[in-house]
Length: 286
Ligand code: DCS
Image (cartoon, rainbow, N blue to C red; front, side, top):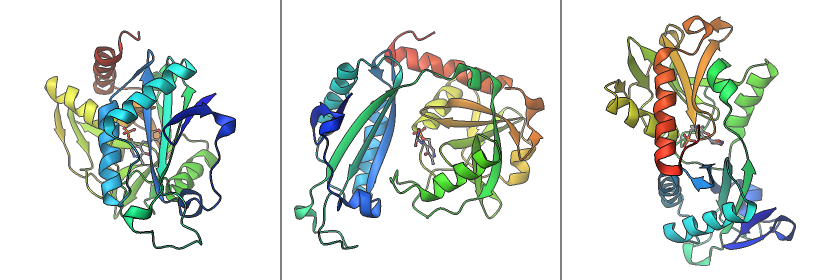
């Protein structure tokens, strides 16, 4: 399998990362997951913009321009012949030896950039049947807007859900729902979509931004306002959203059914509007 390592397409076995890489030692780095449909990157510009915004927030100097990155990722898709799948990319701050929490002055940094692909079909069954979730206190840090590779808080929440035989964990702070361990969360009440506003407590998801754009175009009101756990459980419909999940109906929360345990009409509509967006950018998928 081909991967990108520091702006070169190489065989995966040829990658060498220093054991003192700050990504390995401190999780000092950023990542993105970008979806590929028909061999074409979907919403790549938005993902790359979020990466550049995150890099600015943590003084990370990215080793490429936006244009160069798109070119490299396209070569990677081509190299691995990916039709429907994901690109995972990450950039770390590189080596600072000996180990030292403080990062070096910007001029001395040597970032490490890697990217790989996986072929993953759209999970149509799950998008139709929906997922079951639990709720948990949001124990993560207060810079959730940064797509950091430091994901211990997220993986602990996801693992808790899996231990209970569920698919995802919805997180809350002070009784207000923030997001899920690997996705954003929105509810629908009386045909209005509610979701936590962007800010430092959630990741500004690209998928939700696409979904809200098409929802508003279709005349659906979207309110970027917080909602409580009680409002979550009393919602008409609930959906998680992410690059890999698209608009994913939530049909059970903490053992209680949502919307009678079926994907509701608003989420169904959002799913089909999302497919139209994909097809506009990447060609026909259905
Ligand atoms: N919130 C969290 C905590 C996430 O990890 C993700 C995506 C999202 C929201 C949704 O963001 P996008 O709509 O931009 O994907 N998580 C990625 C991940 O780690 N795997 O797949 C998607």
